[in-house]
Image (cartoon, rainbow, N blue to C red; front, side, top):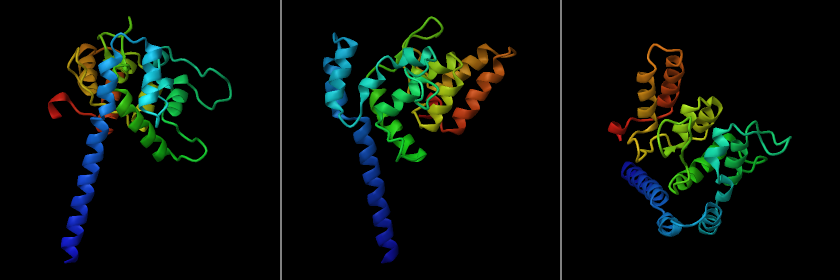
Length: 208
């Protein structure tokens, strides 16, 4: 009887977990936002996001591609952050730096990111980036921004998003760069990225 009870409880917990994940990934507020996003200026769109998702401060994520791409320092001294993007992620996820431990911080940022990456504002374009509308993690790989990539792993940012333009996940993109740079000084750099993200759970498109 106890075994049956434990099995039923585990099944219920799995069902609830799956339901919560599905709710996050298919949040109807995203569809509502995307239906009116076209034609909106970036600032106005982020203001609207703020009304739809009051649990986050998504306006802080505005221009995140530019902030990461420029390796921008914090706006003010004494913040305790080395880069502005770190401060913006914390603010957007409403991290309490006095109370939240590392696990809670990662959980908050990861949950915020799951929503924000569906808005289209994490698709980056730059002269130093070899694909169009590539996601922010690929952009950081192209820019060799190790600090951001290490934070992305620590915060559990989703590495398995498939971009429309290149139809690749982050790991596919890294392997593409590995093949292009085989025998060059950059090969070891891309191999490092491959190994660290593979260890963190990154997958190839064919594995999804």
